[in-house]
Image (cartoon, rainbow, N blue to C red; front, top):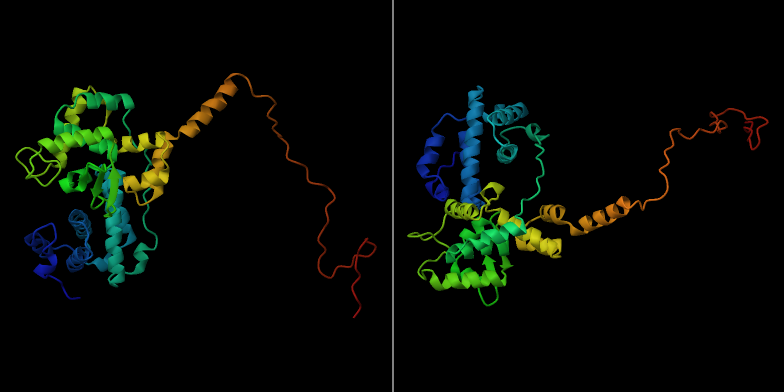
Length: 359
């Protein structure tokens, strides 16, 4: 198979060209297929971070194959996948992290099947890891009030309120430009969703509008990003996380286990509690599937809560009448049942019997 190593085709990869060259010159099995796969990801316009993570995962998997004595990808088997998963679990990785790596490896193996490098039987039955379904963690309303009460810095108050009132992901917020904010119409344009890569429009409340207006009056007009750090043109995720954790400490909430992503969960939970339809919330959050949005309904279903306590109040007052009847004995089978007559048997003297016709 022809090896692809054009500098132009790999120039947009997150790692440097020298890194790819070092990888190709190593002793990993199937390195030429690996390189072709990465080039394909670039051509299909995958995110740079996705390509970087895929490169890291596949390098780890191929090194694992090499260490087991396999020097050709044609030798890979389902048992190799199972052994790799077991090793990653033994290393103490979270099941969600192992599943993410396994999904990347499955995609690579599917590419190898299409290239007729390995037989389709390797992925006839994919390994499925059953992940626990955790409920989203939202902040209590009283804790939200405590948090906002200690944020006096104009930039930080605007940042927290944008997350809390729009439900956008922190990576989406950090990518915002000033031109994406429309104060008059109270809208923010998210040019590209962090996960779906599709843009959307979200809205913000009056208190968020006031905080944004104050920040826009004070910020450096020469900076393109809406939020930036001192002496920098942008704000990093670690920087945003540090300021959030700092304010949690000031508000006496450091032991609550809140993360900056909890602001997104709080946004969704509060809108559902206020009566917003799931379909509308799905669009605001930028979810591909409404099943993802439905997790918040399990967390904040007020109708279910009200019906439970109404029914329980009746039970506690003794308002349930009647008895619960439990039949310990199964119904008896009638003794006289019609027997199917074997073909050709004569039924003489039986009512309704039909005698065979003499031939």
